[in-house]
Length: 390
Image 1 (cartoon, helix red, strand yellow):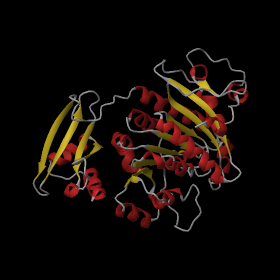
Image 2: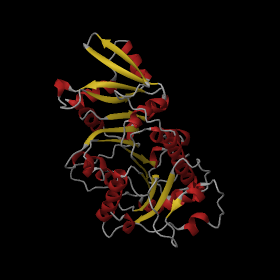
Image 3: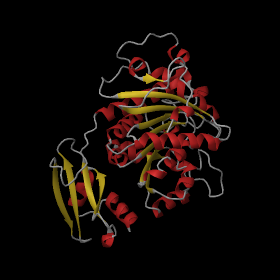
Image 4: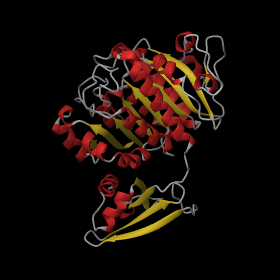
């Protein structure tokens, strides 16, 4: 597939502003689609940066279509991470004649890149592009886990048009359905209809309030580690740290917490696409938010360079195995701890041997889940996964 037809070159004159990049800065080491150059090869690349100049689905925040190049301006000035692998900047996807044309371009590119084991890193546009990202997995014949870092669920109503405030319901209702799990990190209760929280529980999806997450940020690591797609809405960060969004509020994650979650996504061996959405330069004082997104992207890339490829398998000896019997529920839970990364997983059995080829579903977890089981408690992560498998 020739994906070059979807892209326009990066505006290097605007991005660099005559700044001379040093040899170890990303502006020098990243391969990029420039005006005077041919479309770059993606061979031997691990991450592909994609700007999307589409804001029609971002209600009251349409100028987020102009965000990608402002983020690049600050990303390119960051110092590199060695020559572990190549990063390629494919340029920008211009807004299509119809918004559906933009969705088609994004989903086609995501499908192509994921198939060849390259991580699409999407910058710019509204969070409705998460729907297009999800649709890129349609022909990959796998179930998908989606994690959204957002102050809201963006469910909307069934009859609403697809936009940044309704995209999740469109994903849930999309056919064929290949969404196994959705997790929200950082929702703020006063922005969410209680009926939506109840719906999340009925669907056995995971939702974590901002205060709960901030009290123990490390517990977000296994949530993100279980994702295929990670979607960041910049409005999840408090206004004082990221003013570049019409919907920014006084509460939210700090910039440091935002970057830490991005690093967790990079460390995950499973995350295969990621997007940073809703950045609007029109509201961004001194381009503070662009700085933050650039640093979050740097943290994600740094995490990818540190991936351990340590998912437990029968052929991998680098794990400690723990068996915990919970007498009240009559369940035995098998935990695995990696000797390489100290990360934890647990087995969840398929009810009544529902799976023809596997007996257990492996779920990332934390040491706290193991402690809960040792104290005769059933970890919430185990129970919700078990319910989804029924």
